[in-house]
Image 1 (cartoon, helix red, strand yellow):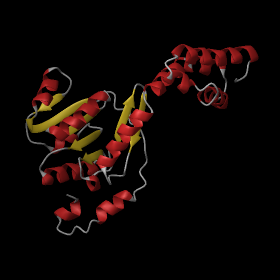
Image 2 (cartoon, rainbow, N blue to C red; image 1 turned 135 degrees about the horizontal axis):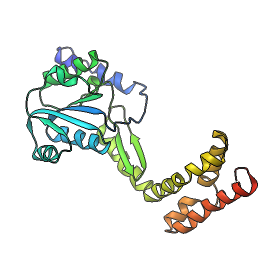
Image 3 (cartoon, one colour; image 1 turned 90 degrees about the vertical axis):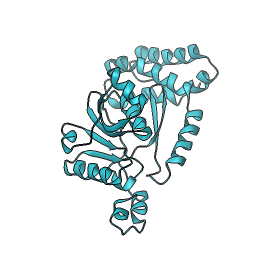
Image 4 (cartoon, rainbow, N blue to C red; image 1 turned 45 degrees about the vertical axis):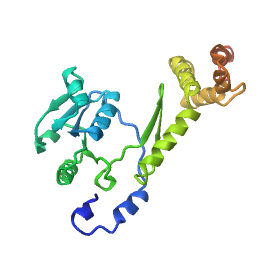
Length: 239
């Protein structure tokens, strides 16, 4: 339910406005940052698991909690307060998810977070969010985010699944191989442009390293990368 519906005057313009919103896509480093989740039901658990995967410091406030959330609290993965939400819970938090079945409470959390210029998300109510969560495909070091600007989370999840199936393990393997030589590239190639040319020559060259990895020939992919490294070391310039 959107804020205008709560006020008794919804004309669906919130949803239309959201689809037309040009979101700024980014990736947040939440490691060690305190993030608040209000609500510990199935929806709250989904957000909690995502925050823990990002190594955030998770604080959950809820009158009731799923056994899975209680277990995470017992093992020390998060802090769980079994009580009503209070405005002071926002203090020191980087972002907040409101994931309760209480519409008035969700609106209150959003308004109080907005007043603090915090990142706030009322789950499944895009107009009451200053950021939205994309569907994320994670394959090793690769993360691919898919967003429909809130128009259809179900469609975003389907796209995520299809992307995961298309851009799977070979891409993750190549990312790890290329990461292994980043330090060498920074020390050897003096400028950003030099490094850009070097890595693009590997990724877009022939033979195609992705094709090699799809065929299960990881050694051939490593040999290809090593050949580019030798070419630079021999010639003193990008391959």
